Length: 350
Ligand SMILES: *[C@@H]1O[C@H](CO)[C@@H](O)[C@H](O)[C@H]1NC(C)=O
Ligand SMILES: *[C@@H]1O[C@H](CO)[C@@H](O)[C@H](O)[C@H]1NC(C)=O
Ligand SMILES: *[C@@H]1O[C@H](CO)[C@@H](O)[C@H](O)[C@H]1NC(C)=O
Ligand SMILES: *[C@@H]1O[C@H](CO)[C@@H](O)[C@H](O)[C@H]1NC(C)=O
Image (tube, rainbow, N blue to C red; front, side):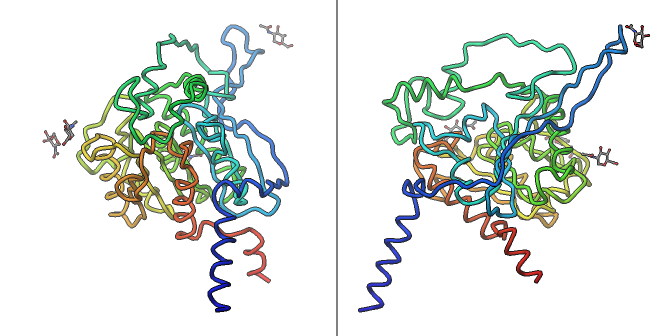
């Protein structure tokens, strides 16, 4: 009898700590801030007294009062906003994982978001993107038809307006992948992002994070969890027909590729409504297989087929059921020992 009571109390307590009620727990930070990293200082060829500091990335950070060791670096493709809120304005990954005491870093690669000046002339021609965003983010088979089960507040016109307005201009070129991963590798090796980095990426950010791991020389990068990565990195000893586009495939020397096999964990996550014959899904399975062939720990997780979630979009960590998506990330971090607290380690040393 007593046993039964304590079980049901436990169930009550654990349900009170999950889902939306976790928002009642305050976020307690020791500090927050931001910094520029990487980039160059170039001189004006017509006046060497004049220089321009350019092509650096920008990192904003939030450090919990009692932090875990793993720094979660949130690497957007469309905009930083996707990490900040759920589609309906509810809690996004940034606050969710601060409540879990992970240091959170929001990264803008060179020339996007708050990393602004380029080292060369830039221009972009606006295109009529709104309807294309709807398709790219897998809200439905085609504009304006939503998937029946989509994890988006489909009746909320303001939510759709927020989503599509948040998008930055994105430079999906090969050169931009190199530019972003150059700056991010310097950030990783600098130690300014901590000694245990896990990149959480979306879409074209995934390719950039993988490239970063093949460029960094230190051991600070411990993991990569990609959400719907478009574009993958492959070693030069396999017969991959190298793409010329900004979404890869990127072929790197085998020695660099093997750095991916040294990471504690890599997970390539797919939303719902992604067929096995989708090029990027095929590439994710091949990349995981090759990483594991060199002793790595990579897996592919389909939120629909493997985890039983329904209607996950291209940006599933902003979906209405992002609490469930976050729970799956908890599993990966815990299973791979990436959830330790800094002071636990200090205690062990005493
Ligand atoms: C650069 O600065 C030096 C030292 O102040 C000055 O003598 C020189 O005229 C400057 N050059 C130009 C192109 O302004
Ligand atoms: C890593 O080392 C190589 C070889 O010394 C160097 O070319 C590269 O710039 C280094 N990477 C970073 C991110 O510093
Ligand atoms: C690589 O693949 C291409 C296309 O399938 C094929 O034509 C070529 O012979 C292959 N090369 C090697 C070295 O296997
Ligand atoms: C993928 O498979 C589906 C269903 O089996 C098929 O309708 C579609 O044409 C295939 N797509 C590609 C790119 O092969």
